[in-house]
Image 1 (cartoon, rainbow, N blue to C red):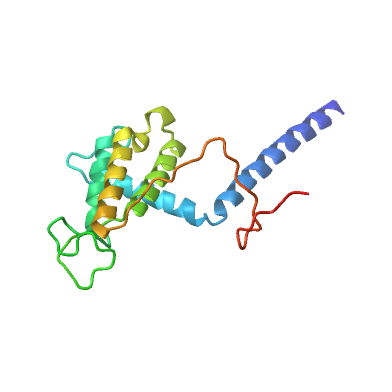
Image 2 (image 1 turned 90 degrees about the horizontal axis):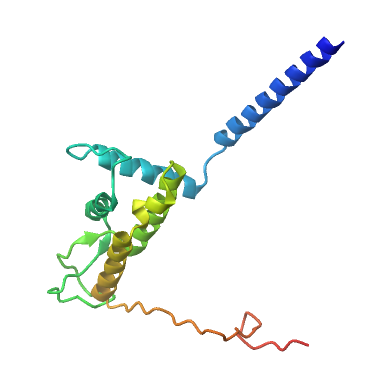
Length: 182
């Protein structure tokens, strides 16, 4: 009888392992979210970029300089007109006519891309402490792109000041009329 019990326990444990594996396969079979799909696509694109370098760069060997080169490489596929200093439309948010200034990647697109690549790096086994996508040089580059694009379009990006110690008054959410608590 103990043999039967042991056999049942062994079968039960293999069944639970099989059902756990089935659950993992079912989870993988579900379609990825838009964010997860984009993150995977971006990671694969970056890996392809590294493989196409001469000599090819292993994914385990790249650094923040390679990331900066990748961001500059992507500019050729950009759709955002960035007026140069000598352009007559420099500083105009909506220029009245066409010009020969280059198209670049928009700052917001680059910022989102770096966020996805930063997450993908860690999901693929990279350590957060040495994540090349989180380096200071990348943050500086993104800030420079943001500032230059803002100046070229005449749109000032002002950092919002944060009031310390002040509590935000409750409002009705529609007309911003303060609500008194009774």
